Image (cartoon, rainbow, N blue to C red):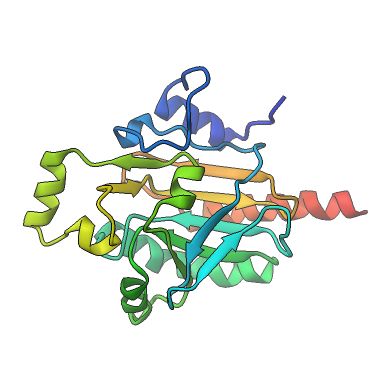
Length: 217
């Protein structure tokens, strides 16, 4: 039986019951219909692109450290930029605990380079324009035509930012993946203006670390 964390339980209640045999890897019709992976499940393998455009494959079977993965909508999103700015307070502590800390968006690699020029952003960023990781974690959703056009009217053309025509985004999410490749913590919220607090992430990371240290003794 999978051991669900409190946060996974909250996530289940927020998103509603998953249909039997649901395909998590599809692009869901809305953020509320996403079927994210939960704590206790094995992380998938996926391929991203670095800021220089080089492919990077994540393999849960070859992790040298536990990893914190945060999915955000893009550098054009003010809520995402605020969240990334806030997360700088946690990044140093997470690395001191022995974690790799990665941030993933659907932005093209060239746009990630622009993000790194922001004064508060010095993170490891990866491009998931083809939604390899986003779909693998069950958090890809498409914008309806009205919302897509509304974004364009505000100067956000998702075909231009991602380099793809899928008109899809990740539900904002954070996962802690243990060195064994198993998801230890999952926070996914379909409300894009509600993000995981850095102190909550740190508490979850510290809890994982304590458990991992006990298992080594």
